[in-house]
Image (cartoon, rainbow, N blue to C red):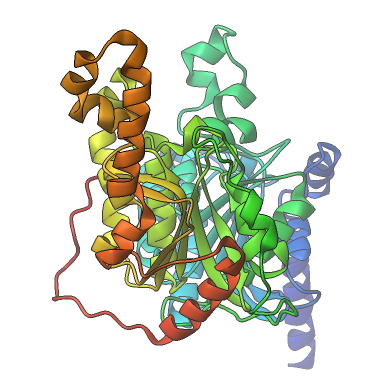
Length: 520
């Protein structure tokens, strides 16, 4: 019996070593030579030292379709398990490109689905590291069946646990859909690529009009498609970004976000804000500077920085509490809302609402961007997504109006009428149906046309001043209760922190329903 036990132990150690080797030393070294890490290298970068507990290391494929031979490799091309990041438990997986090119067969997909299910039941975040060439042709329909189970499990996890995808190599086909179901998708700058259709099958690539990076590289997905929320310089940076994102997020949807101690006092005044908004209402300024001046220690983690940059979104803290920041960006398109900006902000708002993260909105919006392209592209439907997301959110909602708040865009940006909890404005704010110049040209067109040409401009300016005093002044909205207060810019941090403290216990009830029907 002793000899038998010894043999079994040796056999176990041999198989465990085989599982660690993946597709073999030669393939692993080739991956490292290309500047990428292996699956286990990446998990070591992500997790605290010696914290990784592997799951399903002996799983292999079961393909015998059409007599095709496929080498059995323990683990079947994905390393999965759980560990800790800065002492905080998470579940994770990493596709192994050394095994069948990281392709997703039936058992490969089921293995990831199992880890996702375990993460959901344990109420712990899930981090996936993607690097694979789509569904495995050798497995046939079985690969799609396993992938379908994985997709379903990821959808069930959505809104229940935070999910982060790190795309560190080429990811093709349905695997790209799976990666993009995460709350946050981070692409490696050099090697991270996402394609729904393989570049080998894309006419523009075949004809040389665009290369693979131009079709689905990191910069493309950061600036054009809006899939990449952040770009990582390398794999270590990608893991650092995942850690930074998790620091703002709770473990699950029933938990509160982490509280981080700060030496930045609640009553710190912001005198630099008083000269930030130009006297000329058409002159731009940087809303990011406003945010950084107000939040704890000036730290603002901006997401999707290169996509729809007429609106800013990201994470920050007030008194150590996580907040989701949404703000118009006056230096891009004057801060107008367009299709991409509406979609970008709406999804972020819904994510924050899912994970109990209060929303702070910094508003300076002259309206929705006009034009045939926007109207034909469905700005009505997409703009309604933003309005819907704000109205649906039950987390604390705070809004600071710095300058313009006009028309439908005023309504869509967390106004008091959509049950925003705390709305304040600087004295420089104007809240109206439209800008005074445009309104006067419509309302007083005949009156202006009736005066001599040399007096037209003088009369028009007088009417503009009257309109601003009657309709655009922030005190008009305050008198009606649509602003809770008009504040000095230097008091912005103090007022927002105090309001957030009071709103910590906010609970909002709504009639039962399966779900709303957001205008997708």
